[in-house]
Image (cartoon, rainbow, N blue to C red):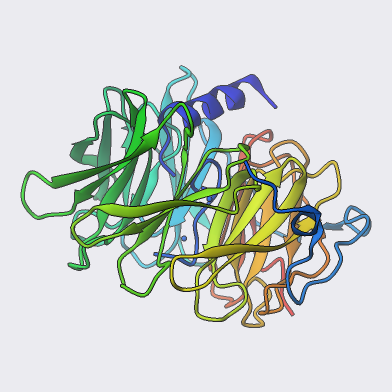
Length: 418
């Protein structure tokens, strides 16, 4: 892993806001299909296969295929540490946002505006600057387009919105103590997005909800959840885990054998009933989605010790249970995940990239929580982000990949279909 990427991941722990993630984000997890993640459970939990699944391919690197034809890779004027795909300028087409280090080794942003036919026009957006290379995105100003929140120094995060041909500063939110992650969601159900910040300070951690408002100042509610000495989460996922219609939260500490801390959200911005779930898991990152199609949100976690995907199914009442894992053969180690229906069969599939190995892996889902054998596509280099989205008129989903070591964004048009 290159030194600059290691520095960026240090920033992720110190001052991040997506994960895997998201997205992304999360420790490195991205979140999709939600509102775009020690006690041993015994050997059976460590070796089980998700319900309805198949044994993993004993050597998924065999039969690697070259990705389908693509447009020329996009070369940002910076080193890409993160990638977001959304309609930032409000013209109805997906755009690309890359955050990373510029030539002066400052964290900044770069935008490539989509035309809806798989082509992009690239422009540097120097206004997107801050202390974190991992933004949170969402509609926050009441206007067209998707806004971007970038972590700053001094416990602040700045919201930028698209204005004519560039991003301009809209609001700055302060979340004392130090914010580690931000996620955008409508917490109070008023039709306007709010911002949830995961914060550490004075040896305590908690969640602060900034309520979106047309007024100059947003209101904030903070819930203290625990002691950092015992649990220092940087990963944050929001989703509907019970039946009250209010977003709930999952917190996790990357690679730590503590599983997930689940808290239930309330319309007033408070988070209650904290409980650790799947405590034997060591999530590096996670994404949310209904993989078994029972109408309840599930967690798909990627672990590095051992390297595997683990399915944690939700019961619709705020509870979760680890129901199985799929091992991943070396040298591939997932750095980032995305969930979407890649092959058009109506079931969620999984796609993952590795920061070192120049491969993209995907697993097709069967709608019952099972995953087929891993399939691999070649990439120009290791990658740190992958997003599925419709980037051209073909209804089959495309992939945008932040191929970090190549210094590019690689666009794969319709790479996976029935």
